[in-house]
Length: 104
Image 1 (tube, rainbow, N blue to C red):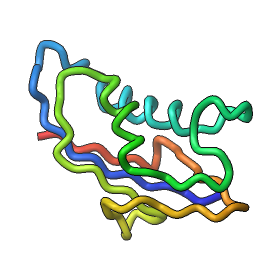
Image 2 (cartoon, rainbow, N blue to C red; image 1 turned 120 degrees about the vertical axis):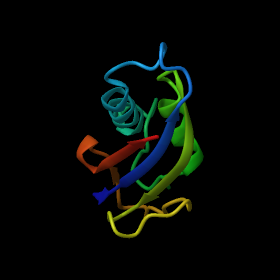
Image 3 (cartoon, rainbow, N blue to C red; image 1 turned 180 degrees about the vertical axis):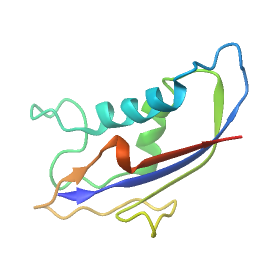
Image 4 (cartoon, helix red, strand yellow; image 1 turned 60 degrees about the vertical axis):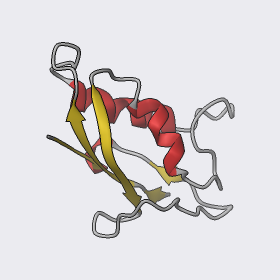
């Protein structure tokens, strides 16, 4: 397993629409989207690269904000806007504890 770290900076654009638990919702949406379901229907299967652009789908499932920046990496100290290459015998591992979201 390759641990995936994510850092997102967001700005609330519609406070009346932005849920109180939006940060938790965004984190869970990413994990739910990314976890491979063994049937190949969703997620990042073994050997699949983690594409930054694919992460916008679950992030944008929560309303009321805009994404200012999105960075990913295989450690919390080495984040960038580049995709992550996953070897054929590796699996990208997502967990809410490795997702950081800051709001403005």
